[in-house]
Image 1 (cartoon, rainbow, N blue to C red):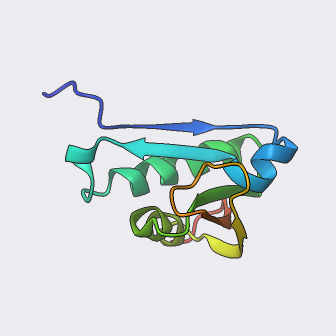
Image 2 (cartoon, rainbow, N blue to C red; image 1 turned 90 degrees about the vertical axis):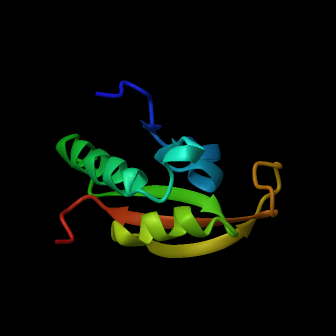
Length: 108
């Protein structure tokens, strides 16, 4: 087997004012050579199970407005767009951040 790290995901709790606006509860990244293989969707699905076990009913995820892959991952896992905001702190390459609430219950 290949023991190479393909991605990381983290759960941030509680939501600080900064995370509520810009970062969300969950952040993830997949190695560029391993993208488009479903790893991000599976990591997020598993993390939603963990969040549910902690009593979370929904979690906040954010992504750059032009990050199509991340947006699709969030939507595939039941994300609902709350809004799109201007990035006033310089986190986004495109200057806009989308904020999604994702239920931790199964969507299947």
